[in-house]
Image 1 (tube, one colour):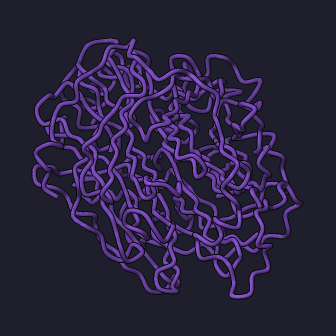
Image 2 (cartoon, rainbow, N blue to C red; image 1 turned 180 degrees about the horizontal axis):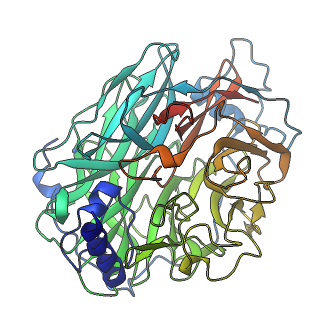
Length: 550
């Protein structure tokens, strides 16, 4: 295993960074090869090596977000089927009040979604009303006993009955990882009601092919389609894809239901590598992805893409983390992903960049053992908050006042702890970042967010404030308005404390993100966070889900 780590280390030093499932990273046996993390048969036109545009690619003219104001809140409620038979909402076009004081929370017990002895990490989550039943579904990475990673799903209507299985693999691929979910929630457009999950598909030791896949479900996540290969690299062992994301257009135009899958592509085995952000578009419900464009390419160390579609205008936004510049950037497309604006700065900060040097981990959060830190890169999670008319973004970074060289220090080094931050873009531009974890010490990290019908947001994150050793964590939440103002103090969500040291297959690895989704049920907002729970008492880690009702 140490030899395999050395190969990974050599790769990271030569080729930049990609965040992969540990199994794939540990199996690196070729130097100068970027690693990836972790559908059916590919259509011939979809399987190809993407040409790399020059770094100085031509972009659409840069422009401030141009929000349209004519789509009413009432129309959205009507689209979503949220109006009661006798509407309590006015029939004229109105907007709800933003930033009201949040009512007391009701938080359900922590429900085990996976219930096995495997190491389960990196959950995504979606809830959907299917014929009057609300199905809560998560896709996540499961490591089998032999270390093989795969994307699995678990869906439940009531937290007592579960539909579970693995998302199918296309021929020629052995591993899958890095799932993220989205859906067409509006009763119209392309494939109304369809739920999607994207993910990486790849093979051991960087053997080709590797690529990005999308699966879909038309029954709320109880069963899933064969995979569609979005894009693949069939032959080049020095290039790889990583960290996909997905979103579906809810814009009430001809693009309603369009699916956008985005990812990073690390090209070539030289240092520094050329890395680009790719966006592939489907106009047929995820069956094919014939259009691929490149919002950005560079020789910086970049990763962690997010893609959002503006409900009002149909504009497509892509965000990514640039570790070389300690900056999160965004690019905009006004023509359904065909051309892109020059990148703009969303926020800058002291971002967490975990990496290896020799056999030592640097920039990892404290866990236990000399080489067993928690890998927690500063990858953003984002939503287009249509109620507040803002792009909302959360991430974690080294807390203010931390040493500037925390990324060059071993896990748990003095002063190197993390906080959760929030920023948003409105028609007037990006606001200053706001710290939304209210703890004064220890690590708060890997946040996720969603918003409700008041425009306020719930942000969930892992939090080690309750452990003086800064190792064990609870799932916490922060309730904020659309500016990041705290509506109430941080609140514990999980009913038990988790111990990441109890994961022994890949010690201290809990994935690079968690997720949360808001679903309106009978005009009440229900948040469903999905997170990794590793009870101290049993040491068996699973994906858990709770219900938060503000």
